[in-house]
Length: 502
Ligand SMILES: [Zn+2]
Image (cartoon, rainbow, N blue to C red; front, side):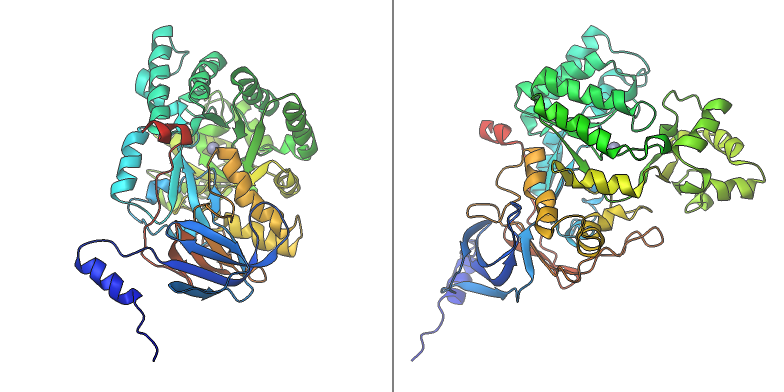
């Protein structure tokens, strides 16, 4: 006689008693394991117990195993998006479709100088979890704004700097990964380099790291890169260049020079790395085109439209007062207004909120993107969000796996996975994520390498990717067969040292 399986009875008893169900195990069999280390794919089985990976190898099903037949599909660590703005929509849409549908299981927020009040953010994520894990930097800009308010178009005083340092310390204690800056944006652009170094030292003293949207991605790119590297040298902490790019026509073709510079910095002892997204269009606001904010300057305007972004390559994503401009290029809008692009640009910037109008613009060359993304210390990021016109929010990772790797063979599949997992974890300081190995957290993605691809484009930026079969976060399935499951096992990920102090 076959004994009745005991497990359902135990589960029912435990639930009836108000307790939690006993931990179950899941056995994923017959996977093509791409473990995140960069090692070649191999046939393996993976057992999940609770929120961890319990075993990897040739495993036989045991009692209590829920068996998933991977049927030869690729099993990889869940992808880590090291530069993400998806946190903005997570409270309203905790299923995190944009992320999990491309295999992302962890996002790193607080980017470009924006992270603030992480104690509240992390507490909220514990009360109302999302499908994905969330780590965050402390943001220089947010801290600067809190201290200096509207009076930010100047260097900070010594007293203001002391208050900023205290706030960085508070955020580091709350679990920030380090300090992020957005030195091309208000209010960070008005900071003296000494201010940034002083604040970075506080983050370094707490065991943190530095991530920077550098002071210029176009006109003063080389100086801006030097500033970021100098911060690494002064603080001895790792430096992540955010969304690395050559963002000006005059800079195109110089990817090898960038890589040479970064490699020399590494050889001299600065642990500099980068993240990058696979698109030639960036997304920002209209004001960022003018580092001196001299919007009425005709010479500067002519320079912008000849060197930084062409009128037909600037697309409006959001303009208060002109909702009808959404999706139109600056060239389109100039035609509508019956004038030229330069006058249109200056007129729009003279309007209230004109400088904060959202745009996507073609600023990069595809050959540079492909060269930079191949740098062994560059990991993949999206820089994306769940709404808007830029397809990177739904397609960055799958665009690399499909078009870049399978179709154009820029690098091996295992290298792509490494750039999305263990390298991403290393470049942000996340522990026990990014590898399929015993005792790692069970963040996993099962996908079909022959099919996986992005579907989002500028015409339909929220089109989910194809080829992602199942996604686990902390051992629970959050995405399967094209749908989110409604499970929200994501956690706030505090910096390791801060966790120990809790
Ligand atoms: Zn940025």
